[in-house]
Image (cartoon, rainbow, N blue to C red):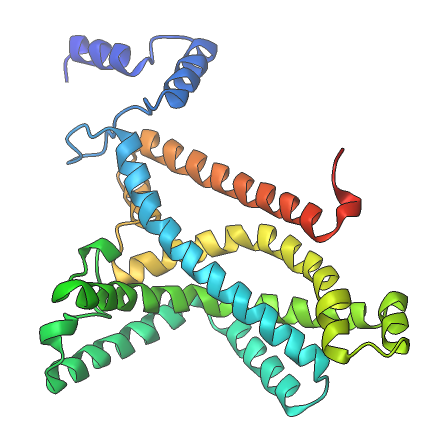
Length: 294
């Protein structure tokens, strides 16, 4: 490359300016959606913003599905295990939680992917593929799944989302169920709960009206902390199931030395983590009016 070409490229990328002007140029461009161009080989100078946003749209579907299921199941199982302490239900919930904790997410994803292949073979053998399509197969995104008609499209969409979601959900479910159980047991021993029980209020009403709401606060804290772990799990899961999400963007940016895409990826994930913590703070105020600001 000639010196003239190098100078032209440096000017195009803003490398001929000082650090402070370059930072403010980047900040202004970021706020207006101009995140630069992908300089990776074979990227054809693709703009970073639509590339990262398209991948984030795929990843956020996976994260939301996994977290919603994990929260609903984890909280329900945790409450049930606390109410039925030292019962078979409690022992089963504890055992499952420790099993899920001990399983690396990439192993879970690979095993589920193999089962997904077997399920597709079974669907084809039964002749259901004509209206179900081919769910459970690896896919670039849930949008690429298609079936025969509206019902078939819904089935294939859920089928393509199911296995990656379960891969991430298992570990989050284990954490939420254990935290909810511990928090519920602590809350059930509080004086105001014992007072409600002494008044003759039914056990179900004591649990739902007096104990459950306060027991959710530690789980809300865990949600905000666990969000980073879920994002990491989504990156690994996307690679196993060949989703074109944030995981693929990250790996491609690192392998091809693409700093613009990498910076865009980091900023988007950082904003998502901040939003998750903001949601947790807002939920605190709903659960406990004493900690509301103002």
